[in-house]
Image (tube, rainbow, N blue to C red; front, side, top):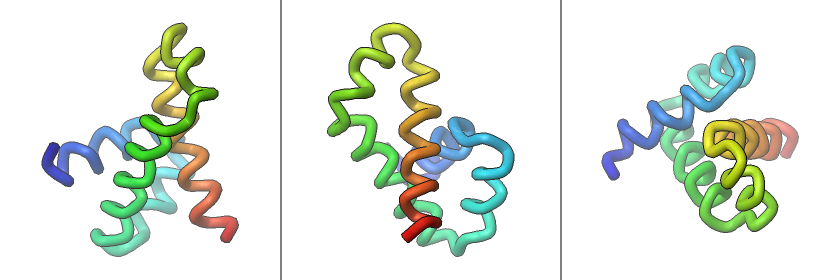
Amino acid sequence: MPADDQLARFLTSLSPASREKVQAQPQEGQEQLAAAWEDELSEDTDLDTLDELSPVAAADEAAERVVRQFFES
């Protein structure tokens, strides 16, 4: 998947406040966060149940986790 598509999907999954934080980062940083989001979606087994109930909610939760981890570290 092209990085631009991945980044666009990641940004869509974020709250407006988190989206602003991410968009303030350099393009490379934004793409790294989007890649971390994809990893979170594929590796976090806790999201599997939520994904079955609501794929959008699971994607949103994973996106917010990635942003929290990035900005809190």
